Length: 309
Image 1 (cartoon, rainbow, N blue to C red):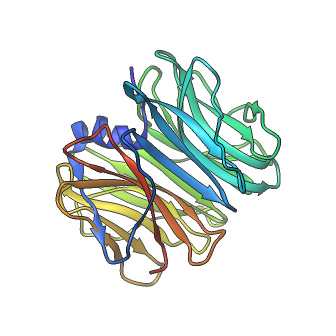
Image 2: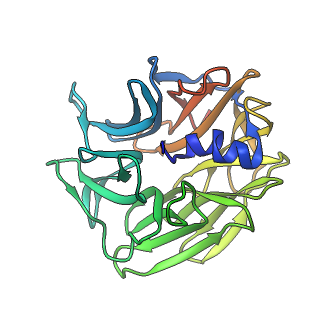
Image 3: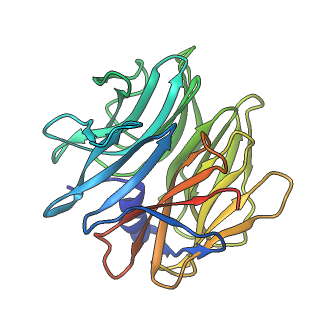
């Protein structure tokens, strides 16, 4: 089978499960990568950039590529004979160094596991014991002492649990479990905060979690479908919301604690998007996302927008 990614899940398992979609425009997005191929899952930090690229003739089978800061060539980081997606960068991680985490699975069958790539010197390694299991591990995000990821049933392409793993204690905390017949999407971890979205058959909601106080709060939104998110060091959450159906009133929104949500991007009808990462190594902060024209769902491209506009 083909890729099990937020993008793919949103327009595959998610659209089938939830019928969501759409995008918005108050800030001006910048196209980062846009060819005739599927380009999804962007992540950037300190000049390094990684993403997942669909193969020629097989647009829903992906490899993860890294372009290091100052380099002109890209490096494929997943092993030969595998698929990979959902990269996330953390430069200067106190435990893992300059690290890129990503999900990797067999070329056709098998469950995804999280892998680590050494950005500085190259080379692939395994995360600590307790991260990968016989189930599927998806959507990893790394920051400081914490690894956030999703875990789903064996031989499936979605997550039903959001897990926060402490690299210093090797302890796992389940932050959320999907409702009956629902799914969850791990967002990102950043400092003292983590984010994710949770979808039932009737709606989707975004959540933020403060690690130091073990406090979980819903991100306020009046939209029925709120999906894919990233969080900042101050607890600000960026998320996508939409109406029912691909490309229906899609917006990228920001919620800063103590304020009302604001719209960053308001997409035209027929355009959908997924937020993938926040780069706060630059100012203003940049939100990286992938977007698609619903008339051709095998041609996702990569964009960024100022997160502080």
